[in-house]
Image 1 (cartoon, one colour):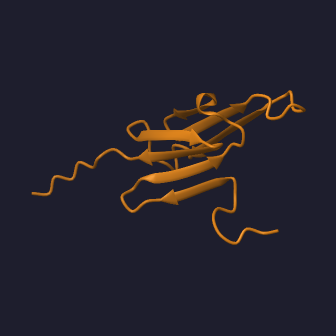
Image 2 (image 1 turned 135 degrees about the horizontal axis):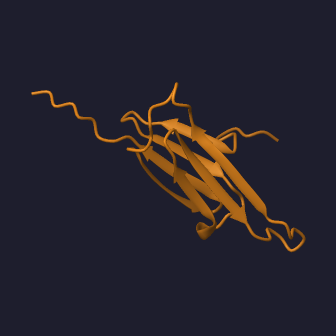
Image 3 (image 1 turned 180 degrees about the horizontal axis):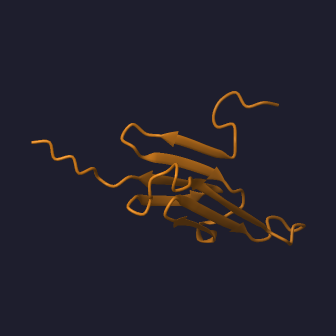
Length: 105
């Protein structure tokens, strides 16, 4: 079967008009305490770990990924704010740039 509506991949990215970036990453089986977001200078890393997804799967799973660029192609993200949460195996986070210092008087 094929997907007619909704997200079609494991990672969804949506830039917002105000400069924020919304992302959702599917991590089936990952619970609230088993996921983390790490803000680095030019990227956001995310990790999630499952523990015994089913009674026949004793190994668990580890999800690791990152979003961002290199110093040549992306601004530093250290002044950005990242907020996120995982619910029902989907890690959702929002990357918000710092307020601009445009003092047009």
